[in-house]
Amino acid sequence: MHLTNLAWTITHEDIRAATGAKDVLLLNDFEALARSLPLLADHDLRQVGGQAPVRHATKAVLGPGTGLGVAGLAWSSAGWMPVAGEGGHVTFSAQTSEELAILERLRSGTSFVSTERLLSGPGLGMLHAILSDRAEPPLPAPAVTARALAGTDPAARKALDLFVAWLGRFAGDLALVYGARGGVCLGGGIAPGIADVLAAGPFRAAFEDKGRLRPYVASIPVYVITAPDAGLRGAAQALAADAQAIDRLRACE
Image 1 (tube, rainbow, N blue to C red):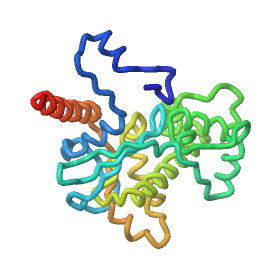
Image 2 (image 1 turned 30 degrees about the horizontal axis):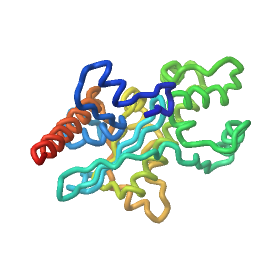
Image 3 (image 1 turned 90 degrees about the vertical axis):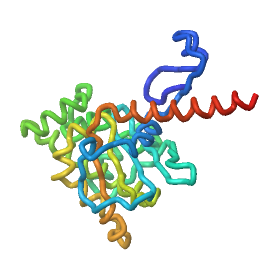
């Protein structure tokens, strides 16, 4: 397995050799996060608009961090089933002249700009660099966020507001793609730290701005996952399910 945003290649054999483990399960991080959703309690979540989730309706989870992770969770006769994907790599869609100008800056030297290119930690730093005409290397996302929240850097505030609006737009797109009336959850490394901005900023308006489908998405709740161990809970659930499947196979041998 080669990681998209890190120069790492991992194989089952490497992990077995390093740990001595007999059985190894490699899991996409957002598939693990999707698996955690039924395990989360009210205190693990902060709701950002919408109404109550529809029982057993499909859920979606996404989140910017090193990249932009996406997964779904669908109900079946076997219980909740994760739907892993690479939704963060879809084409970035500009809607305004300002966004088109930013897109043109990003298109320099490349023919394709993914949504992840902007909705990620590196993307927030790059956006700030574009808006401030910063010649030096882009600031890390925590520094941009800190400047924005402190009110000391207008370009940082503008970058954060655009980032939040684009995140809302993308989350609303996923709500439509998955039919996620069970709720849309925001995880990753950035969303929990800007939960107040997501609740009070342009996120929800962008989420619901879907033309004739506005009434459909208006009722869908969005949650910020505040539990720091949510991904580990989902990974543990996946490991338990995998171990049960292995035991069943071995029992048939």
